[in-house]
Image (tube, rainbow, N blue to C red; front, top):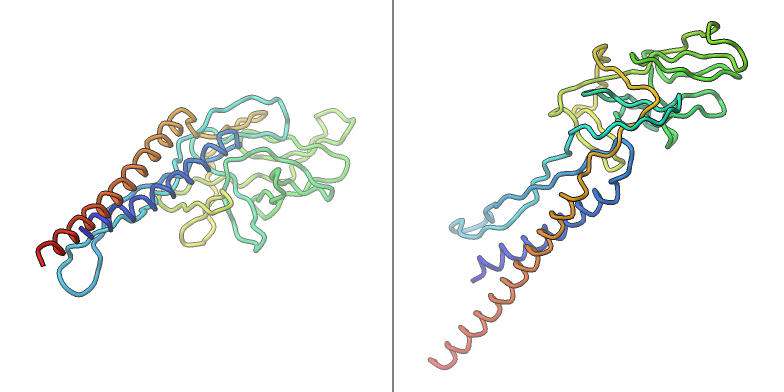
Length: 247
């Protein structure tokens, strides 16, 4: 009896967590460059004295879905999308590197090239800074050029090159902020094979229809586990009454 309780109880708890993950994905269905979270489950034995006759469900998080999202043209000169595999390197508050597919960039008041949420975009030698009274032009290879305001494009000067990387997917871990990091914490090597699509942004890779189907399925599985708990309670009550009658 208690074996069913173990499985149903932990199954219901993790189904509730899965619903939260799906809801988080749906909330980011329109977030630029977002990668959907994936949840998986497996059975594990309860360790302890005696035989391993008790099992429960554990959440075995598979990570994130790295499938590219759709690329949409914006025409904005500071919007870039990674073509195919690859990532844009950004600087964390502690100075470490993180990686994103969100290419909605901006230039702050001091001339630093940043993501829309204020993280510095890294170049080959650190953050990229543009001179005052210039506008940025980004090339397919990540080269950032500064064009003086009001002048012709033939007066451009190169100020840096966005660091584009392409580590193995197995080496990447997703943080709670949606950014990716190398599992070992070391910075990834720049990859000259990664290119950008300028004047465009990559959308989220969340499939809304599939996510809604998963949400309904998770809700039904949660209800099924709760029904098993109720059945276990009823069976235990019936067994207790039978013992009282026979005693």
